[in-house]
Length: 310
Image 1 (cartoon, rainbow, N blue to C red):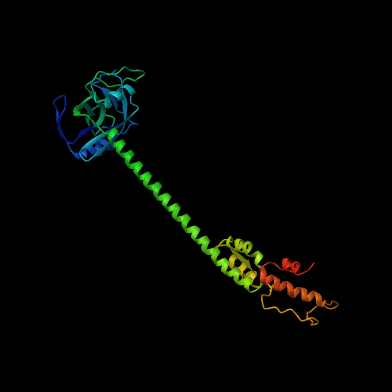
Image 2: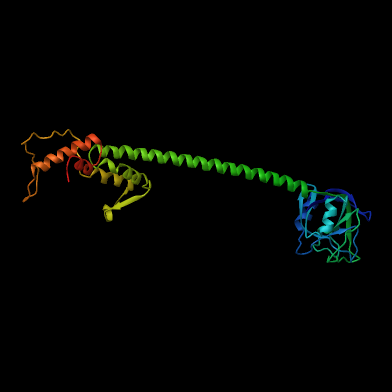
């Protein structure tokens, strides 16, 4: 707990000695306190050599004219009485700078903090404090003021508000990111559809492959590249661009031009390989299949079978 134990000003000790403490004295008390050298105890009343310690002072801090003590390892029963307000006053005792028992000679050093007002609680395994009878100290009594509950509660409320605000910001950011990615995916697919439909219209491949090619192309990573060539001639190109070039270079497999079936007895010229000949009835069947394919928007095999092909 954090306790207000002392402040700057002119004070009269219990031995009637008056001392004027400045803010520099307060700052020096806080700065020079070292629990590794001497850890000041929390006690009840005006302690004697064998009185128990109900806790220890972990650190001192100065805020302007005020001196605060941060305690730890408090006895639960003692701490309960403190929180319940049963000790209305505290008594801070300081070693004089020239005191023989001063752990830090040359400065005012906290000897103990005494809590005044209630009877001590039942004790278990508390270590006794050790003070020499002839130690030269100054003891001052103040109204108790500690900030544990109010400060902790306020800090917790502020922390909870900040965490809630941060969570909401993260949620909003996540939703915006998701929305942006969805829009980018739709735009990319639309671009792919326009490109592929152009190739289909040009006869580069049949419409039946449209959806699978669009899905594949839309799934290609935007920032992925491919390397071509070696040495100084090595170049990099986006994977999507390479795929577009590949599709655009495919030979035409389907002609959507107007096809007129030949009159009976007409012939159709084909550039057949050497040693082969084309039967006129097969060429006629081919033309019928193309017309059926265009009219019914189907693949070539289905059209060929529909017009009598086997």
